[in-house]
Each structure stands twice: as C-alpha cells, then as structure tokens.
Length: 278
Image (cartoon, rainbow, N blue to C red; front, side):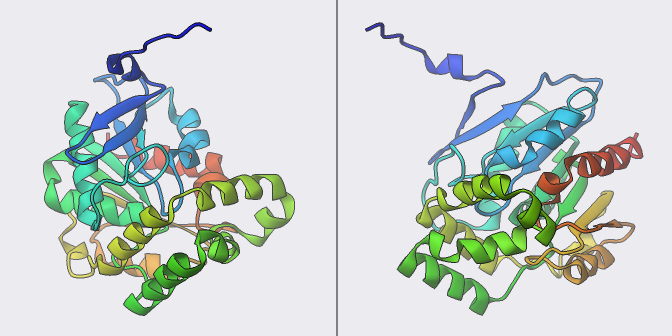
C-alpha cells in the first residue's frame, strides 16, 4: 500500500480550495482570475452546494472571473459555531473576496444567497459593483413558517420534508422529464446536515432587509422563475420595486432553481447584465 502525504498548500488549487475562517473551513472554487475581466461570485441556496452553478459557470468561464463557494454548513464547508445570521454568511463571503484580493464584484445570490449578497452590499459596499438577487427577496417567509420547518427537521429529519421542498424547487416539467436529475438533487438536499439546515432556516427567519432595499445604489438584477414555489414572482418583483433602477427578469416555465433548469438562459441573463456594466 502506497501512502501519499499532501500538504494543505496543495489544496489551494482551482479544484479544491480552502479558506480558513476563525471557526470554519470554507470550501471554494475559482477559475484563473484575470485583471482584464469582470468577476462574478456566487452564493448557493438553502440545502444545496456550489454544484448548482456548474453548468452556468461552464458557459461563462471564457469571459469572466468566477468564484463559487459552499456557504458554511453546506457542501464541504464547516458549519462553525451556531447560531448564524445572514450577516455571518456575508462575512464569510467578504473574507473570501479579501482573501482572493479582488473587489468590484458582481455578487450573485440565489434564495438565501440573495439575502447574503444584500448583506454584503450593506456591510462592505466597496466590494460590490453590482448585485444579482435571484429567486430571493428583501425578506423571505414568516417566523411561523420557519418555526414549522425547523420543528419538522428536528423531530422527523430533513427527508420528511424533502418532497415538498423539491416541488418548490423545480417546475412540474422538470419533475416529469428529468426524474434522475431530480433524484440527485434530492440526495444533495437530504445529505445536508439537519443542524446546518436548521441554522440557515433560523438565519432566514431573522433576516429582514425590507427597509434597507431602497439604500441599494449599485446596478441590480432580480431574477425569478415563473413557477417558483419558494419565492414567488410577486415577492421578488416587490423587492425589485424597492431598489431604484433595478431590472426584473421572469424566467418562463421555471421553478426556484432556474440555474439548474435552464442554465443557458440563466447564463445569458448574467452575461447581458454584466456587459451593460462595462
């Protein structure tokens, strides 16, 4: 048997990169960061990891600097010390941007990620050139809704609510036509630890940027799927209306994760938005 020792420094490659925080290891991936290209950073949704961006980033790789990361408690990142707030996730994102020595990023956040990028813009505006608030809002859900979800996960496990979550994540067409893909995303969901899922639910419960949305001054794109069962179009459009000059984009026929259902259409929206900034 041959054993190989791989030092931590060897993990700092594009394939497996690590950011050390005070209480957690944050897993991220980037392409070759070039000074002559715009940079997009991505924040994944509750119960997913950065693989939800794979097809989108593949389509954008030739034209942009790209950074994806597993927010704490998801994918390969540590949960760290609970409880967390949306600002906790935003601090991780700011630390990653600082670590990579980049700035003026286009911050793309999906669902809870949309709140994270709003928190980033509020706390570290010098880092943010533009925002993409995808399938998200200035406030998501009610305290009662999040309490019910937390209670279900704590008493019966995440798998007990998985089917309902998948119904909100994806359109009926996706359920019918891509059952194998659906099974994989169910695995991604239920393999998230219950503790991490609950911590993120509690952060969502407490996040309220309704009165801060009007203070967002950077160019902002708000995206939603027509059949999004988690953050319906009216909710996302309300947030868009609160942000002066923002652009609202409805993706027809899609659910809560349009980057998965229509990665090409999603990538084209990001590319068009970014090109208008130059």
